Image 1 (cartoon, rainbow, N blue to C red):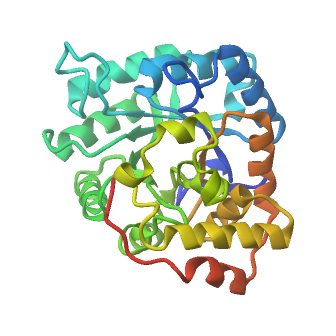
Image 2: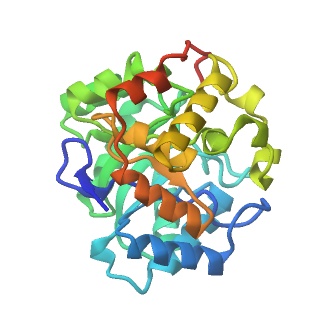
Length: 321
């Protein structure tokens, strides 16, 4: 495993971040506690030290499973990230959003579920139009100052929103967002217009989610519905993966993978890892085999011509958060 600093911080993270959306229940493709434990054990064996979850994943069960799974390991050797924003109790209007009350109570719940005293990277899952950004940032700054959180990051926002939040942090001398977990892969490159240049110029770490385009980059187009999760995802409505020459890009990934004797998923990850602005793709994995493939992708190099070949068909698609 290779490691890198998260943005301009001194925090060292593995180049692959294990996404924990698949830990819990409610979907047939999710892993229970025992299977999640096996996957996390193997991830740590392979050198992964970076784990990402969220309070809303399986209504907190993902955090509980992750916390239980790492309880036997040296906490200091791991980097734990979670998120706040989504609705946790539909009967309580203060159990969502980024107000001081919502953040403080949900942070305590996340700490309890994870079984830790401090969360390494606490991220806002979405932008909250109903709460002044200064209120959110002051609350997060207070959490850092009292030791409940080490770093704060953002996820799935617009570039101008991230820039505004960091401006307010700088003006008020508050802890800034040090990372952006955004939607970025070979089939969705709209972030290259504004978000990625901003992050590069300002030392903000980039942690792409959906690096395999919800699995579409991991298998040929004809096999899109071969998995349980594939059958349940509505790609054409939720994500523009089939727009912008998506099928041709999928076919080119298949070609390059065959040329190099690796899997399509490895090519998609290797392409992301070639980008200097990307620190660690957040890879949602539910099998040890796919986990091992993801780690092997760190050592795969693509030539300039291969990168150009993969990128060439892309056309602008509708923006999605």
